[in-house]
Image (cartoon, rainbow, N blue to C red):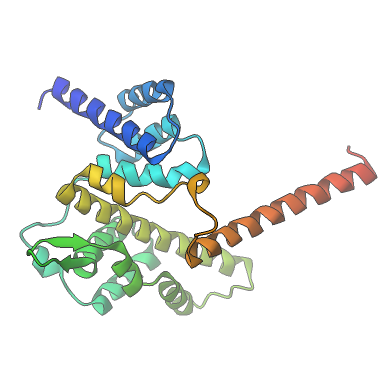
Length: 255
């Protein structure tokens, strides 16, 4: 493909991403769209992390809109498939063997291996055959079979970390980060496969969660209510800390 053709294709995808964000409810101004095109022209488009960061900086202004952006970015700019297509059936193995390899990769912090295992997990555990012989892919099936808390407990037990110490708490935080990275890779791979099968527009319509400002609080699910309670508790702690600091300064003065 010529350089002109590549540029035209990139511009079309950026325009489609902007439209999908607006359809989802994310406010994207005309100037934001222009900035997104400039960002895409300034970064290395073959580096998805650079492209994601550039477009995100131009198009996302509120933290509550970031998840919608990531879902839509993975739909319109999917990662190139790196697994062997012809030998995909060979990758389908039991969850026990996959977990053993995943634990070793998480322990070593091998990002490339973690990413490869995420793709294998989607193929092995997240694939469901439809009545017409086609396949659908579901991230929740992978998350269910490879639960994060179980992995974290196993890794901490094998490492013998004492969470009462600073080193133990740091080790737990790092292992949790690696597990979270694995699940993010699973979500991205699931969206990539669905985008290839059904089109990016289908992913944009079906996988983007409602924006925080559009949620009907009288009809939230149990999981959504628990998430809101966690967010409110964290916000309350931050506000209480700021208020205590302000009162202390009012009583004692400020140097």
